[in-house]
Each structure stands twice: as C-alpha cells, then as structure tokens.
Length: 204
Ligand code: GAR
Image (cartoon, rainbow, N blue to C red; front, side):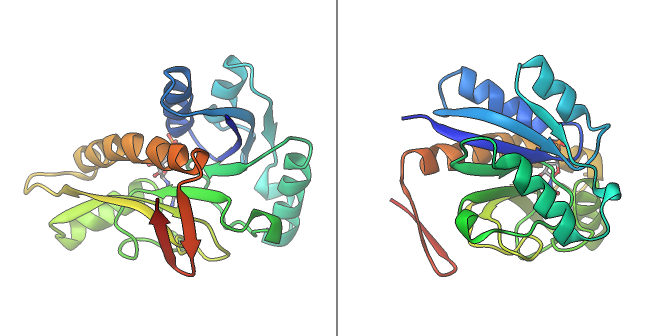
C-alpha cells in the first residue's frame, strides 16, 4: 500500500521533483500529501503547486527560535495523514516529535560523519570536500534526530573526487547519486524493510 509523505524543503526543490518523477514512474509507492518550506520564496513551493500538491510556507524568519518554528511546522503537518517526512534540502534544525522518531529521512550530499553538521549544507559541502583534498565523497540517507546530520544511516554510497573537480562538477556527480539513493531508501521504508536498532539500520 502506498505511504503518505510530507516533504520539507528550503530551496529549489530538485530533490522533490526527482521524487515526484520516481513516484509517477512507479518506482516509489507513495503520495506526497504536502510540501512545507522554511522560506516563502523557495522555488520548491512553486514546483509543488504545479503538481497540485498543497504548498505551505512556514517562514523561519517569522519565529523567535527553533522550537516555535518547528511547532508551527508540525501543526501544519497535523492536518495531513503522514507516514514519513522526507527532508529535501531543508536547511534548518528540526525538532523531532516522539511520534515521528525514525519517521523522518534526510539526504546529505557527503559521507556522514564527514563534511556535515551546522553550516555544512548544499554547495558548502562540495566546496569543503574539494578544498580538503578528499578522494571520495558521496551521498547519505539517514533518519533525522535532534542534531544536524546525526541520526541512524540507512543508505550511503561513494562517488570519486577527481583531480580536476570543482565544487560544481562534484555536486553534479553527488546529486546524481542522491537521485538514485533517496527514492530507494523511501521505497524500502514503504515496503516495511527498514528496521532501526539504536544507531544501526538493518535493510531486510
Ligand atoms: C541536495 O543536494 C541535498 O542533499 C542538500 O541540499 C540539496 C538540495 O537541493 N541537502 C543538505 O545539504 C542537507 N544537509 P534542492 O533544493 O534542489 O532539492
């Protein structure tokens, strides 16, 4: 049976678009019930509207702190039946209600626990990897807990960093890997094949 998703984002929404493509193609058995953005001007909201999906802005700048901002988000989400929240370029710390423990996923454009944490998102990650001289990077799909990029890892794969890579060329290769890994992790969840035991995730 198809699972119900809520997608949280802050930016252009290419991750959302890829997910919707995979759903339309029958690779992910899910329905996106709503899209929530931490910025009113995120293009991801426009993408959601074009697909006829409720697009909700909860601008972070309107709130004093993380707690009140997240409470407002969860109040919005309450109106929909949601099995899994998929973060898709959501650039803010999220408080995790007990009822959503191990039911929120994120995709990070590096090999966690390297090149992650506060301030390490989007293009900053690829700049840091190239600058550091790392030989591999990759994509990580993990469950979300109350710390940045910290919850149990579900899927993780490498891409090579080439000698002549720029942050842009590396980003392209990593994002291709994300486009493959994230829908796969969501589909595994939909099939009930993801079991969490402490920090370990077993794919059944
Ligand atoms: C994606 O590459 C995603 O991995 C990254 O932001 C990009 C969002 O692109 N997320 C993070 O860095 C989270 N720590 P999009 O807005 O076009 O979907």
